[in-house]
Length: 254
Length: 255
Ligand SMILES: Nc1ncnc2c1ncn2[C@@H]1O[C@H](COP(=O)(O)OP(=O)(O)O)[C@@H](O)[C@H]1O
Ligand SMILES: [Mg+2]
Image 1 (spheres, each protein chain N blue to C red):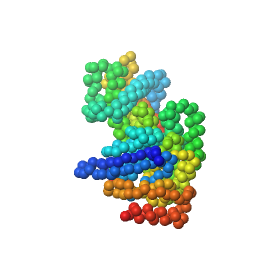
Image 2: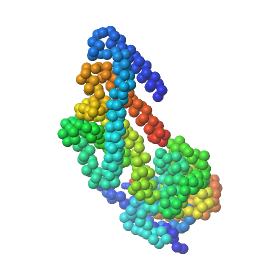
Image 3: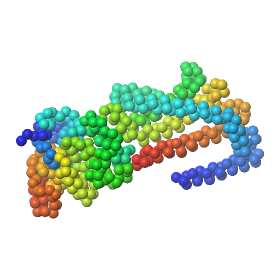
Image 4: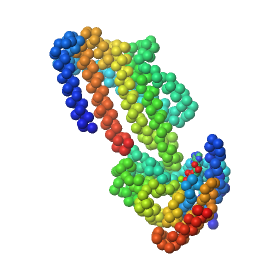
């Protein structure tokens, strides 16, 4: 585990070094291939004056809201499908139709129906997350050992008790891996939606920020945005999800 | 003598694609209150199926299941099943919480209100009975198979069921641990009055444990004999009478 970070650190430094060498060598124009020094200056400045922080906060709050809503909906879908085979048929059909559809294909339609505000981005996020997450949850629910349902019968758990005492904890590994997929997909969907939908009162999120920097041909700014996106991705996947797994499925011996 | 639990003409068959397989044919059995009964038979003779019917997990094709004269229709906490499968514990809960689960459900079933301290006290009492008090904060995956079965036993005891149904609960542990568990079970049964119906294909296990042994045969599953086992507890596996009964049962099973 530790050596993974050591390796990443080593290769990261090496790649940065090569980058910087290429930049100072003058093979490419400074305008299209800025050095790390320029990029860091822009990054720190825009973090300091709040312009970038504002966009980060916007993106993170939209994705948190979208993930939260989509998780609730996915739980409802998967639970309904688990307890009713009629509903299961409907939800299965909906999922089969919607799951293969990339969120980006829906964006023109969403623009027309919902405009380009926060609501539109939320819908893109929910679409990108809801289907894979409810599929994962359903798989999790359907693969709990039969013995648990017998125990539930034997100890006379009602549906509600069965749900929170057995069904959900027993399928938590599936839930977490579903959340990881959900995060990855919604993060991508968010950045593209922000680029397409633009901003209201200059608040459009990280995707919009990068897009806008490009308009001004501010490549260090573009790279600053990209670095922030990478950093957030690493923090969420390597720290938040790792911690969640250590506190649950790893501790339970999965 | 009035019977406590009564099985009358129980029949059960399973339909597969091609054929209808009769698994239990005309099972009649009277079980006494607080007795230790084993059901002994070769693998596949329908022992688990029979126990699941008594538990109320599966329906019969015909026949009656009566407790104190009243028909049993569904599963309930008066008849608790202990399985062979180590997976019967909840891996997401510590040992103590696994046992508390049963205490809580039992209290709820009896409409009793217990404080969290009382719940823990009761759970600890049963963990102590199976000699695992020191392991209360372990997760199931940190325990050996034998210890897992002891936790499962504690959970079943903690539910304070009148009848305990045991489906080869010690079938997957090594023989030394199995003997320890058998001894523990006899001891616990003697301390507190309970009816135990214990399924096994191990003749020595049946002789060691029970007061009566129901002998079953295969194809279709039928009761061929019911043997009283009057050997005094705690039984010695090396004694002459023990081995005499063992041989008698062996010849019946192989006839
Ligand atoms: N759900 C089921 N569907 C079809 N056949 C079953 C089912 N459960 C048990 N059987 C069959 O019934 C027979 C008895 O099984 P079981 O009660 O598990 O035997 P035992 O516990 O004595 O080994 C076996 O032949 C088994 O294949
Ligand atoms: Mg069996």
